[in-house]
Length: 258
Image 1 (tube, rainbow, N blue to C red):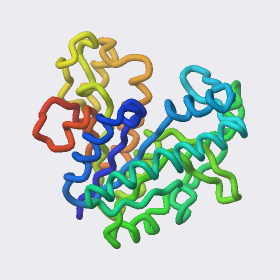
Image 2: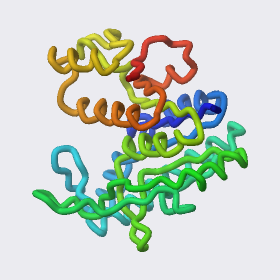
Image 3: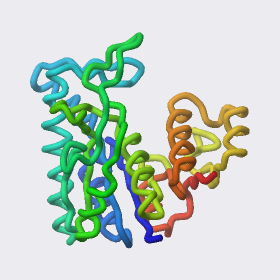
């Protein structure tokens, strides 16, 4: 089975021009088939403020009302996505920028209202792996922003980590898929105050003890649960670390397997 890398970058990399250029340079050198997934929440918050639209967050999660969805569509699907695509073209990567609505790639349903109404937020239901594969087979590199659709004409704001994992699961019937979550830390840390104290390898067993010892806590728990969910559904490996892990020259990152 041919290999496919799904690489996700966070807002801190997108916000800093130097970090973004450095990352895209590394991304352009990643061998084989690849897909990039990006968010852009910080930029969306900045643009909202300029337009006088208040950004509402509950427990760190954005409430997406009609006005906010318009800003997110402009920022994620336009400004951030096309900026990345143009920079990759300069690095001779034939990138194509997409939302989940394009080629019906990622279908979601609006999150049901329980205690909190998140507004136009989508939970992924279906990945059109055959359509995405047509682009890959044509030697295009898909660049997905964090927007999906419900197949009834409605765009939906969707978590970029989730998009990366569901694309990887969807494509795992065609390719041997791996996910790379790139952020500013070197990986999952034994001690948050020591940036080099990376937990090199996590599997189902070591994860239990990391939870018990409270090394993995709070916001990191849903991220790692998401990783194991992807591994249980066909993904081969998940990597968490800074952008240098893409070249594998830097061995200081976290690898998650079953």
